[in-house]
Length: 182
Image 1 (tube, rainbow, N blue to C red):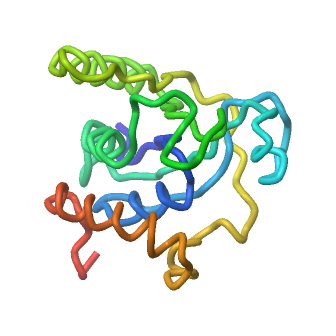
Image 2: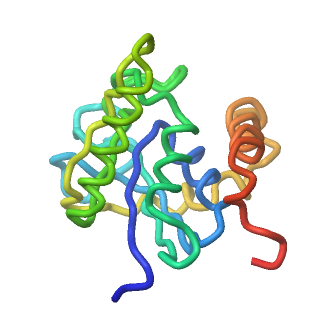
């Protein structure tokens, strides 16, 4: 029985998503990249045009004994707006869509059930527009995107956009965070 698994999520800017998921216990690796499109070996400049059909996403390697896929989904849905089509804050375009690229049939079923539960419990609110599709190919983003937040904490984007998101996740999901020993 496997002890680790891969999850791939798109929820807007991959710099934000990478920083969020790196905070979680049981997560051993988070890579920014592109998935869901038609262009082979896309570049950031190509994806940014919105014409490749790729979305900015993160590939997460995690330990099944330390964190559940449903916990990753909880953080995923709680750290971006899954009700806006092709938009996250000021980022607009298909490259910023909310997407789950499942790597197993169980992930697909779990994600669809999770979305159904959210939609059923929120009769007054907007429905989830997150797409749930199989992962075909994940293309790792250029090196300058990796560990962007750690290398650029003083950048305005990090201060204005990423820091508040990390604070929100830390407050809401404190039981899922890595400790200083991890």
